Image (cartoon, rainbow, N blue to C red; front, top):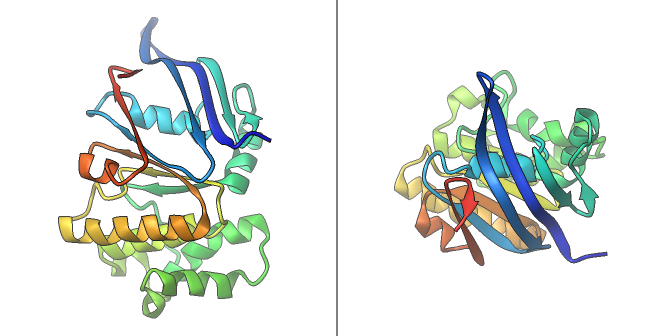
Length: 222
């Protein structure tokens, strides 16, 4: 078994718009070792979020090969991709993406319930305590600050013990002080879990905290 958890070979992505082909990513090649931390950096519109979506199996490449945990993603149907994401992948988004009708605790329990984990309530409570929100388990997202919502999303992201975690601008909606707390928490949880971490960001200070940085501009690795 390769120690590489993610491998991209000659990946292209383009969209059709009014009969024209719009290139977004051009000939992307890189691989990531299991347990590594990596940042993909670039200006808005550079293709970095599109690249993250392809790596995570949220979208399909137009050409090329993407292997996640040894599984070729290109050509798989949506049901199979969803299964792979549920088993191997965690996500943290800029806008938190918590379910508004569920409490903090219920939000953290969702991925564990989908996977059929036992003792999921106790595990979810422990995760909320780990991110400093043990006392806010019964609060709904609207009752939490932005930083607190992102802590809930961190707890949810690690709930399934993912092999790889994708964080898309994880501190993009937070002030500097809160961002610092969330970043430290993200890296700590990642170290404890031995998860591979891939962060998409335009924040070069955040990127510098990872072991490796891949700059992308105009859809190509620089």
